[in-house]
Image (tube, rainbow, N blue to C red):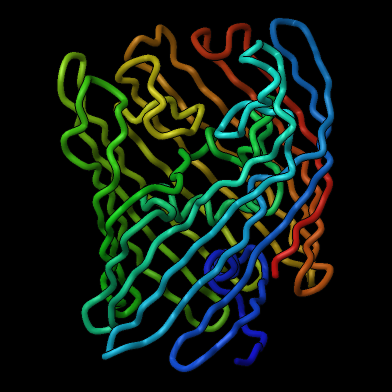
Length: 387
């Protein structure tokens, strides 16, 4: 058995392809099988000011950013003409004192309100295997990132930092970046998906997904997601265009269908990169929360848009983005809007470490979700390592 360094796989490749950072993996090969190990860790100081109903509050936190920590184990081989891959990925975090998003409760609390948990979360985000060939494509079985909303979150520059922090005061084990103000969160979901071979820059993926019970009483059919992409590159210019869709049906009393459509593009001109994106959906839940199928107000309608520009000066990238999501219909009496803008500086200290500074402003408008309006300002400083 031997070990060697190579360019990052799994999450590292996705981030590098999105222009978000570099990663290296440790690789072990024996016979025709290879195991790659790679990951990321981050930590930030954030100071947050919130103004709601004429009252201003301030707090600070040592927290994860939009990414949790991550450790990936990726098995690859080629047997009888088939490219085979298996991926196990665990996502721990540094946040503690929380009883939400799957963190265990303090057994001494007995369910008491306000009794915090001292534990941090370990989230199994990737657990899948796939096989295929360059002739007919690839089939994936297991749990991995969803298709609808996948490309835009990987293009969001705040993936390396914090971005929006409104819902993180709970605290969650990550912040929200621009989720909820510009796009909805794709999530890591059980799925069986098929991806075509690449045909001159074009490829497509489609699959069935574990159904969510967001309305009615039954989920007797799976959800469906699909994505088509076209990538083009020439000299110092590049482009990536994509379209995606999501649909799910429930049945029984109070049931309704949920569906959404997205369209986006990323364009590079030398050291400048621009991103533009928009989506619309019915029954997907609250777009201003950014969580698919979180629908306490029945069949709401959501839409949003996101724009971003970044420029790289040597080892330093600066960027500005802006996005807004809107919710109405269902049981909502108002049009509720959640918008955000982030200015960020991302400096590559070396091929492993990136130092990050961001300033973010959020504003929530609408009496259903943001009575009296809500304004939030967050300053964050920290760093992230990819290995």
